Image 1 (cartoon, rainbow, N blue to C red):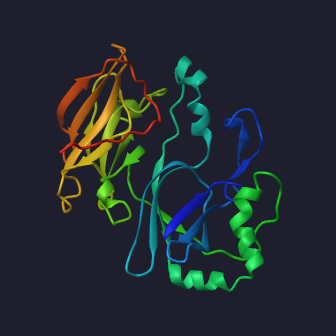
Image 2: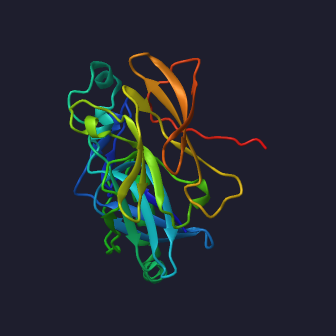
Image 3: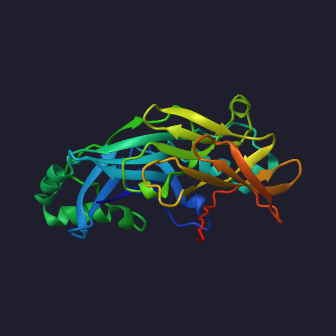
Length: 287
């Protein structure tokens, strides 16, 4: 199965034409978030779930169980304020308030086959309206879906804030335990105007932060997990790569961390400054 969460018309955010991407968004908390489930076998939309209105930059992972349930982990915000707080003009002036804190939520889409069978009984025209809601909503107002949708309930699965999440890529689409991301140190969490200054490892089974890395006046980028070649059984056996911006020295370096402990294994100075961003990285292994 493939799941597409939509944050558009009738799904939490209304889009309108504008010269600015951010000016094109208006948050509508009364609208639900919709999850469209696409069958890879049937190659079609098979069911839609709804949940509370939310906003997200990044998804973490998704997997199914033997009881026909689908789990989707997303880094969520209650609104779109974070988009405006991260405007360049605000960053240049220095943040005066704390950034909104993201919450890692696990949405549960229960009884996929049963709900798909129910969805197939809905008149095809209404199904099409459901599928087109987000797209058509970009251009004109449409009537909301008239039939009831199954609810995707969620739980908070980490007792800490986290952004730019990454996992061991061998566990994409599989049940997993560990997620890595950028977060706030204990010091930064108690002060206004702070931005992510640490890397964390979270255990989704215990809902705890079990390891953290940070250095004075250093701001990490997205951690990239590089698994140990050939080891498919130890989920956290590998290293993390992150580009670090060092504020006072106005320089950047690449840090290599043990993915089990987040203890530093190496760092490499970079020839140019790479500021903190929401950019994404990758890696290539040579044998």
